[in-house]
Amino acid sequence: MRTLDLVQLTVWSVRLCRLAEVDPLRVVAVLGVGTAPASYVRGVGRMEPAPLGTTRGEVSVVQGRFRSLTLTFAAPEITRHDLEDALGQGMPLRRTRPLGEHQVGYRVVVPDAPYSCDVVASFPARPQPRSVATRVMLRRRPGCTAQARRTSAFGSAPVERR
View: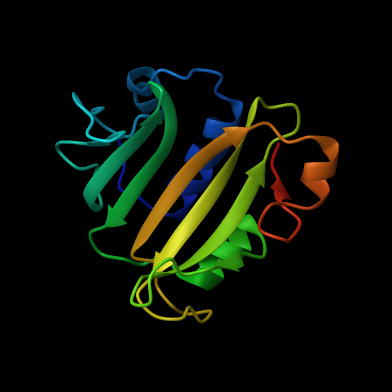
């Protein structure tokens, strides 16, 4: 496995779109992220050891099915500008707590894939183009219809990958 960077995040998000597998152990194995959690508390399992380039890795499941992968960067280097170059225009998401992180969402869509992937980047302050993401979540969603491809849940056109 290689150290986490923007290229790897993009590869994983596209792979999550194409992968029909729902078993979290197999999804993590196919992605090559590291070792899947042995147990889950409230649907979240911590990866031990954390993947290379991160201080923490978590897998989220719903009813035993893979839902998302969250990674906290050890040495954050990926900027909002980098993410938007790779994934298209992001949509700032509403903060859930007054002192919570600022988040920007990106939708990755692969034509005819069973899933799409929401990439949600977290920033400690209101993100500017050169702000560095401290954490990223790759959240898999059921495939998009033709209408959903034109306008994503984040309000901007999703990036289609081949």
